[in-house]
Every structure is written in structure tokens, then in C-alpha cells.
Image 1: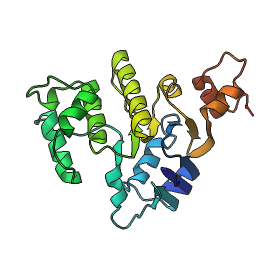
Image 2: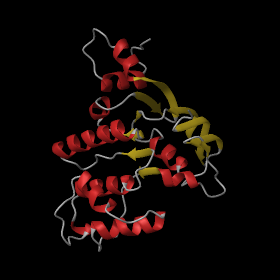
Image 3: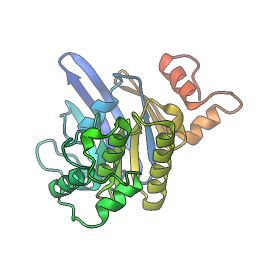
Image 4: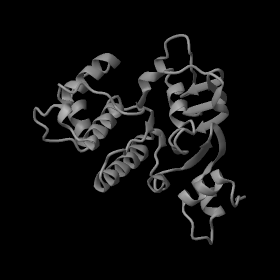
Amino acid sequence: MKEAIQIRNLTKRFGDKVILDNVNMNVKRGEIYAFIGANGAGKTTLMKLLFGILKADAGEIALLGEPLSQNGSNPVFSQIGNIIETPVFYNNLTAVDNLVIHCHYMGIELGENISETLELVGLTDLNDKKVGEFSLGMKQRLALARALIAKPQLLILDEPINGMDPMGIQDTRNLLLKINKELGTAMLISSHIISELAKMADTVGIIDHGVMLEECSIEEIHKKLQGEDLELEDYFRQTVMGGKRYG
């Protein structure tokens, strides 16, 4: 079975600055992959390259087994949902109207899908409330609904819990775990809340200054930390800072 995401020797520069340096990544079908790095490490740039928003200087990308073309259409995008950077909506329209427009744009058949998806992410009883009146957390929930509306095989989520209160974060985590378990949806997720990623991840990729430092299963990390009072955040910090190395 082909990987959900396969990246080989990916390099991206902005002028003389190398943003991604010969990066390799493998996201298996059906797994949750936590993509961890500090601000400016290259996470969002890599996600933009996956969708052709940016063009790579070198390297290869395959999504759901299909090589990504940087000079043409990529039908595989219809099987992928995403949240990348701050979600943008039509603020003068309702959540339903925004999703209807998205479905038309993506060629998704309308039906009960919209109301079901809004209920799934906890956006109910909105009546005619405009998106411009939503809190940041509500907009994040709507962005997740938009990413889920086509029942994708792969989700690419950049800071999906940004702006949410603790209850919203917990609800979103439980929702993503449910989708992953019941639908087998593969997920590439980045977040600065590493403790949340630790509760979901099957595999962890650590990137720093455009270099992929490590890619291993969460079970391997737990084995390396056995007997030590450390969490994934500590492991990340020590890996990046070049302190104690494991393995």
C-alpha cells in the first residue's frame, strides 16, 4: 500500500535562504503523524508545497500514491482536506453558506453532509449568525468542518486547535481520534501544543531550521524515555537543542 505522503529530498529556498534542506518524510495510510518544530522551522512551508501553493526547488512529493505535479492539475487534492495558516472565510455569510460555496468549488455533492459535518465539529444552533461574528475558536471549528466535508482520505492540519479553549481542544482531539479510527483517515498535524500531539500521534517528525532531525514512532520515543520523568515536549527540546541524545 502506498504511503499517504511520501517526500524525497525536498528542498525549498527563498533567495539565498534555505527553508527546507533535503527533507524526507513518510506518512503511512491510516496513521496520525505529529509534525513538530519551532516557529520558522519549515513546517508551514512544507505543507504549502504539498498543495502546490509553493513550488519546490528540488525533490519529489507523492500524495496517496500519486506524484505531485507542480505544472498541472492534481485530482488527488479532492481526497485531501486541509487547514493551513489562518483560515479565510466570507465573513458576511453564514457557516452553511461558506460550506455550500466550498462544496460547489470542490465539486462536492450537496445534501445532509453540511449539517452533519457542522454538528460533528460542535457548531450547532448558529441560526443566521455570520462568520464575521465568530470567535477564533469557532472559526477553527468551521475550518475543520470545511476540511472534513468531502470525507477525505488524508487531512493536513496546521495548528488546528489555535484559539480554542481547553474544552474545545479536548473535543477536537477526540474528534480527530474518532475520524482516524472509524474512517482510517491519515493525518499530518502540526501544533505548538506538543502535549496534545503526544495524545494522538502514531509517528513523530521533528524538524529544525529546515532539517528533518528525526522521524520515529511514538512507541520508540516512549522506549527511549523509559524510566525517565520526561514528556514528548522534553524529548523535542533536547533533540533540537543538541542536549542528551537518545537511541
